[in-house]
Length: 236
Image (cartoon, rainbow, N blue to C red):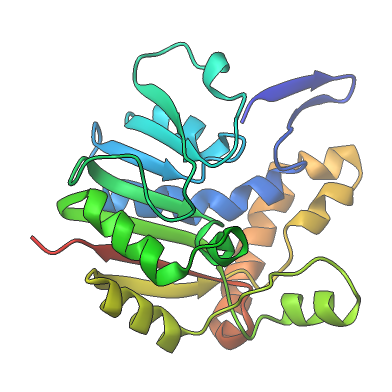
């Protein structure tokens, strides 16, 4: 996202720390791996636009979609971005087969809270994908996450709906999409880094060390990682 100038220097406003921003590095790699530069991508549940910002910078044509009005579009001075507001929790206001890729970042697990359901949303996303097009889902909460467990027992904010790998395979299969890859990530909490001293929040060395520790622990403690990611595609 945008950088803000402070007396202590420049820092990432959206994520409050460089280490917090690094949680999206895997997602950036997944997009570049599965979606060709110049493709048309739907940012499904665009929120404040931080991922649309990446997509634009990475050379994609982007459509941001949300059920809420957003302020990101007036900040973008390019014809490669447009915002579409929706009204239905499932039905998307797009024709069939119009997107090369759809990205869901922390959205799919919330559709029940707006009156929809995950399977119907996956089927609708599949309708809008071109044959061979990819859905990349990120920040999909793990049912067995230790971070969610702590939040639940501490009375803090947590996800209402959480998932396991078998459930992901079932949802994707029943939607008519083809599951290409799936994985877990995030043993160490990232948002907590925003509470560090200003210098530490902006430290590239600390962010890299945190990434290494998170990756190593993620191998040993995969079942209790915070999130799943998965890539599915519409069959050609």
